[in-house]
Image 1 (cartoon, rainbow, N blue to C red):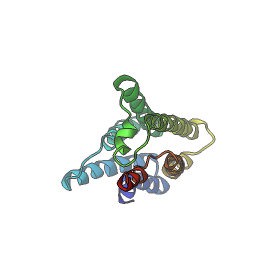
Image 2: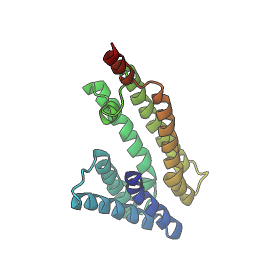
Image 3: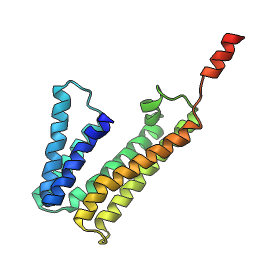
Image 4: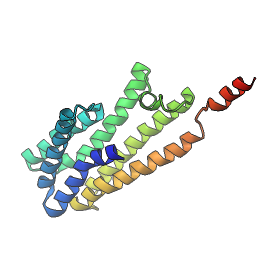
Length: 189
């Protein structure tokens, strides 16, 4: 929970800055908050995950373009690009390197079959593609204001992620291999 709140920090500050200012102030806020996160992790000697670095790079590039060109289009593309990048990384790792990154992240905690790990990997890829498309729709369809997009970016996408993770956990719980009963039987036999 602590990590979730820590990761949510720049998004929350972005939302607050957007509510009380404009997209450019919010973008500056998100860039500074993301940089402060990295600095904090460095100072406290914590591991900085690859996804945290990717997120920082994308916010600096897209946020920087937004501020420099005074065009909010770039910052609105940032979530879609980030999610599509996540989906691409999962796909490339599986297809070209025969590595299931979701399994590598969770495999020490959960035991299940290769088929189930592949389904989980594919479902996360599809989820990231879907959320990227939804963000692009909210950002560019013309049906939503920039502040509405900002609210969706911070809260809507976070809720979608949490709901997907819960659904994934429920589904996965039905497919977990437990060795407790087999080891108990071996001890008795």
